[in-house]
Length: 262
Ligand SMILES: C[S@@+](CC[C@H](N)C(=O)[O-])C[C@H]1O[C@@H](n2cnc3c(N)ncnc32)[C@H](O)[C@@H]1O
Image (tube, rainbow, N blue to C red; front, side, top):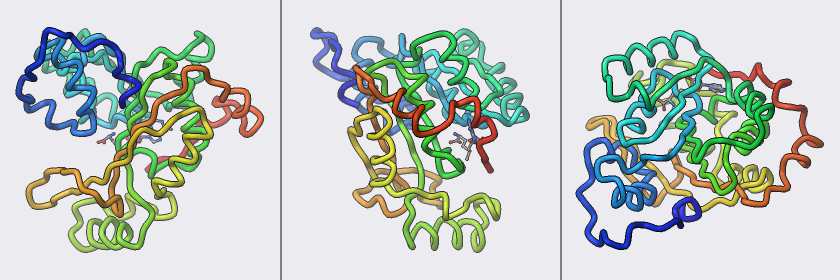
């Protein structure tokens, strides 16, 4: 996250305010929150434009908006977007900061291509990449929609025996905390593979951190092990030679609007 945050934290603020409950819901934003919190108490993400890819019902979109960011949540499932819009409408404070659009990342990226350079300071994709059939196109499109130097935050599931045992056998088949068939182990990706994919699509990976879910408390915490869930932060290169190479390698984003999801 560092590259995204190098700009001037206010020198006057040496003591950091306590984290709010909203901030605690977004642990992978630590550095981002620390810098901006000093400048906008209570609204540490003020002034940032964020894209929440695969937002579903807006579980992450709303907290990001409450932290002051201008957030666009996108998801191809219209019912999810309707639910997200309805839920956000109960909080008038969100009306000028949170918006939703029923579309895929590929469709949005095509619109951005027409408009010119990427417009987002950050893209978040929480629990999305393990549902995609074409990660090459996902990486390309994330690059397209980001400003140079913008940040990409991904949380996903590693492709290990342990993730199969806990993520599919235990979570789906035994405990049924996730509907059966939600995940396809073949689509899981290791941090090394994801890093390679992003580095070849104009990103520089800054950090990879293991995450652990406690099904009893319902809380997430950081762990040194990336064997099951992990979070990755990458930054788009400022001088980006990537789009030409990607066009040679894969068709244009509008040819990928049928990316699969579950
Ligand atoms: C498991 S849900 C994650 C929802 C939310 N991000 C969260 O963490 O609670 C994955 C979401 O990705 C969406 N999705 C799948 N393919 C997509 C695409 N090509 N572009 C945008 N969203 C997509 C699905 O519709 C689904 O809502």
